[in-house]
Image (cartoon, rainbow, N blue to C red):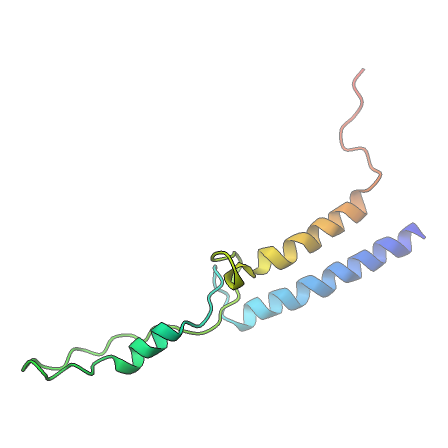
Length: 111
């Protein structure tokens, strides 16, 4: 029975960790979670709209701001940005460690 329970927990932990790392890989393997920001999108659309008003040459094209969803390794704040590989996978790993180390003596007795 104990072997079946440990195998079940192992499958459960793998079932949580594998899709978590697949999502992290699919969204760009970034360090921190990022969500799309509507303010950045509006800034990019209006970028360069004032060029030519003051007799100046057009400003050189700037690199666009990456305004896409990224599932990061670490949380980027409180709220929706808190979802990350560490926040999803951490409890799963802790559950697995508790299942496999349960009942084993970690510290030897003194004396």
